[in-house]
Image (cartoon, rainbow, N blue to C red; front, side, top):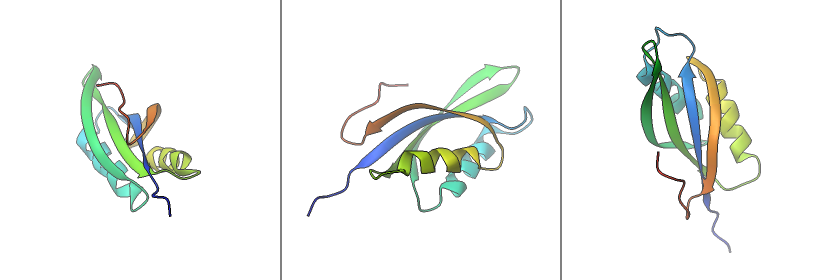
Length: 98
């Protein structure tokens, strides 16, 4: 029996509106992921004019379609205006530091 590994998917999300607090966007993504994936880490990056982006590290099972599932769940989360997948890595290796 082989043990299934995990992916770490790093995404950057922007709020749907400049007045939306980035922490509320992060909470919205976290809730939308449900049992499909877990939020593992985050950092907040100021963009401009008081708008911030959140860079999220999301862990999902290493199986076919899981990256697309995470992208769909992130993009469809309430309060998310835009998202970008920055990188995907196997859990055993490391993405470059933020």
